[in-house]
Structure formats: C-alpha cells, structure tokens
Length: 79
Image 1 (cartoon, rainbow, N blue to C red):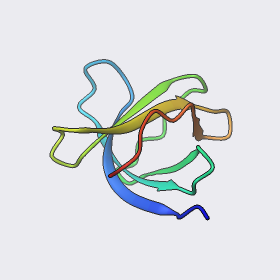
Image 2 (image 1 turned 45 degrees about the vertical axis):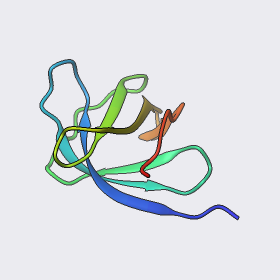
Image 3 (image 1 turned 135 degrees about the vertical axis):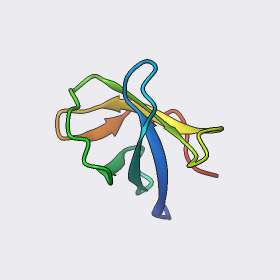
C-alpha cells in the first residue's frame, strides 16, 4: 500500500526566489498537496515549484502546479 508522507520544506516558485515555507503531503498517488505556511498565495497553473530542505541546501522534489493547486509531474520526494 501507499504511505502518506508529510514534511515542511522551502518552496522556490520563481527564479532567484528565496523560497517560502510550505507543508507538503504526498499520498502515494504521484501528486502533492501543498499548503503555504508563510502567507504566499500567488501561484499559477503550469508554474514550477521546487522543494528544498529547511536549510535550503538539498532539493527534495518538485513539479508543476495544477489548476486545483496540486502539483503534477512530481520529480522527487522526501527521503
């Protein structure tokens, strides 16, 4: 069975963007449910999001933002 994984990360949403804290929930379906913890609300479908550890040193994963606010094309997951 698939296991749900949740973790906090920094999400970089634009080139040279410092990142914003998010809560990421992976449910094993290949999609991620992402909640912004620092009030960021400006995202667009098709926009990329890359997740980094909270120290902003390691890439944890990423994908494209879908119209419902869920990520598609997940490229990685937390270890």
